[in-house]
Image (cartoon, rainbow, N blue to C red; front, side, top):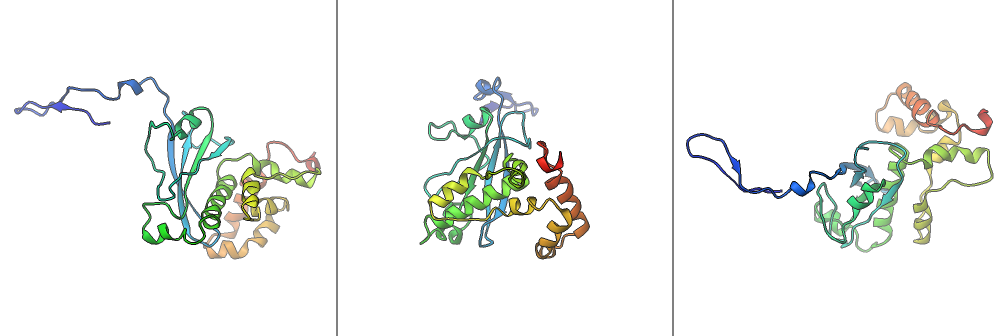
Length: 226
């Protein structure tokens, strides 16, 4: 926040006359991170992640997707103490808050803004679901740690936004879960060979990441592994 100060003409030694943020000194503030992903049609989309105080880049956090209105609006790396802007409140109560700037949002050019027309539901919906899918696959959600248990038990592990998407007529295959259910690093790398080539990745490095990050991230052991 801006402050008023004065400075003697002889030496540069500014002194503050006002202090507009002393009331925040005792608060544990949230941390922000800008993230980017690709929507189902390949369009790059951005959004904000807001972490609980002291938990920047922590994993295993419950995630809340908070979608801005407008739609000609956007969420960014700033703090707003408004009654309708409660992302910081949710974060300080332990939630990882995800704020996607789907197509129709401002700040990304006229083309991005107008791509919401005429698909005012499905296109933003796909942008948001793709962002959630990317985050739970790469960053934070316990959903991806648990999904392989479908191999051993008669139930399905799904993300709540899959249900929301289906209610809107949207469908997106949980590709991460499909791969993790294979429980075979070589088979997973073979299945993803086109994607690995597309991004010029080293297959050996990709296999190491799969073995450690995907298959090794299993805090609750699989029944078949016991």
